[in-house]
Amino acid sequence: MTTLIRSVDINCDLGEGLTIADCEQDALLMPFLSRCNIACGGHAGNHVTMPITLRNALSHGLLCGAHPGYPDKNHFGRVSLKIATSELLNSLVTQIKDLQQHAQALGIELQHIKLHGALYNDAEQSLELASHICQMVAQHFGQLALLGLPQAAMQQAAQQHGLLFLAEGFMDRAYLSTGQLAPRTQAGAVYTDSEQCIEQVLAMLNQRLVTTFDGKQLHLEVDTLCLHGDSQIALHLASTLQDRLSAKNWIIA
Image 1 (cartoon, rainbow, N blue to C red):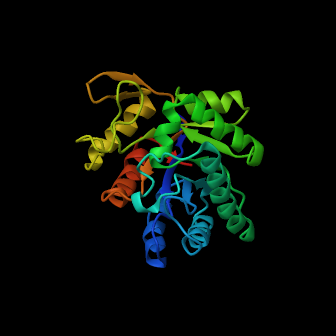
Image 2: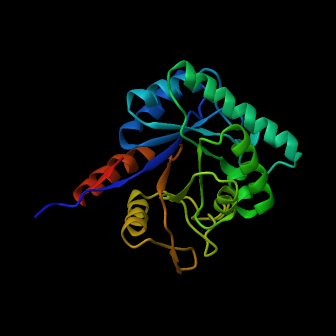
């Protein structure tokens, strides 16, 4: 009997440190990923970390994408900024183009864009903001896919602007019954137990379900799963998850 092998795309936010040592720590996760989202100078990242992260990703065969956010390194992009839409869009274009230039120098074509932190959440809750961002992407980076929550504002806006969209699920974050991520300020919103994360992954892959904070079953159709690289359990989770997926005939690809 032929064994059915299924593939799962796992992405991770990387390049969010300051130094070469930070990049080396990131590289430890790369064997367990298929895609990475590289910080490009807004909330984190600089002209040291960007090319190193890209080179490391290339050596591990990962798809590379841009991970822009609010231009606010003081708060790591995790606080909503009251900023003019035009200023925000100009910053996003600059961030993505900065990473794109480093990528082109290495012969790498970027594949996608994933917003970071507070901007990710704000765009998922505001169709107006999502539409502005998608219009900018269509104008400057129309060949790149967008990652975002399934059945939320970014998916709707991406479809309206003719952009490829990859619905994203989170293995290490709790969900609200609305389909949004629970705020990091809420106790239990960020998982600290690898087994809890793995159970959520398997539920999303096998049943297309996730259990929300209030105990409801939420249906999710996802194309890619996110592992947060700055989590204290990230490396243990990544290696353990690969073993568990392999045992169930899933490959990371």
